[in-house]
Length: 467
Image 1: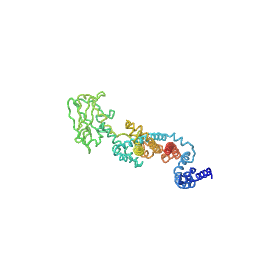
Image 2 (image 1 turned 180 degrees about the vertical axis):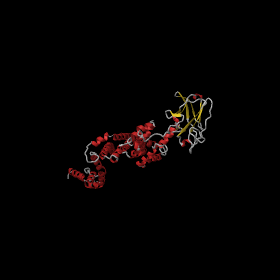
Image 3 (image 1 turned 45 degrees about the vertical axis):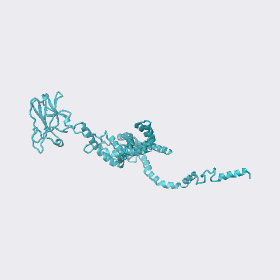
Image 4 (image 1 turned 90 degrees about the vertical axis):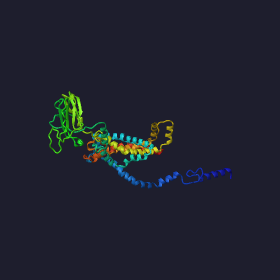
């Protein structure tokens, strides 16, 4: 046999051999089938296995998601009774209704403010807790509100925002700060006894009808003083007449148990200490004094020929803080409760992403002279951008469905001012004026608002898989 024949047979043998160069589906030593053939066999002959496992999930998905969406779209085209076809009439009514427009405006505020503030606080907490020893305990405390249901959180903050400082924590703190810099009125709500010398003079104050003269004594009886404001008060004393000055007494003209004479200081009637008494002439204050512990006051001779006035500051109502749940502040107040709950969620996710940031990049930047703010702004935040987007998008989807906190925290008088689309959907579908057609239209519109956010989230997930 010639050399050419041997070479040809060897080449054929090599091509047909399992380990030869021509073997495309096996390894160098013929280990196992080709991957492409294996994949074809699994998807080709065992596809029914995948269908069997997916069937329960698909049935539930169709029953709980697809069918309600399709039915809501169908129902939104009919009137409240469900028998009359109105086409897009419900959608037109939705945008013409003032209450629904308010809900839409509030939803815009929620979507812009709540996720942004929660994410920003979560970022700050995650970065700062890396620098303290008790960072884990701090994270636990911040994340703890996530263990509370929306119902419980709503009840908690309904009490926190209570108008009465005795019950509402927010107003208790606010009133304490206010009273630190501004003295409260000594006798709020007090007023002169009827048919006395004092008459209302505007601004909550009271002024005598006639002028006073030096050497005279002027008694000013008051009523409607709360018993709590009289704790530790002394008995009133009749002021002595003094030449060249105006003297007098301000007291509570009321005797416990009955008796006593109107306009006369009886032995057991209480003095009103700390009241400001002014002498007014021509609209200007010419002299002033403050009542002593026994209710007496003394004005200098400049008060001669003037009228006496008890300013309204003596009787102003006690400061009760801010009306957190009023029409003006109810939405920011409820957003504050939402941030309290979800800032911990944002912090945990961002902290997990921060753990994967290469430390050598941060140290290199510090070695190059970058300050902590520059490191945070130019390195930490850009590296955490994917995590921040995840948190922001998740919270935006969650906020578009907000219902529980608004329904529980907002009182009836402010419910329309705090209204959101999810709450309006509930009220239109199950409230006093039931209109399931309008409620279905709101549900479809809410779905359309959520879809762009979900699309952005899905695109981000696909990009992450490709990496």
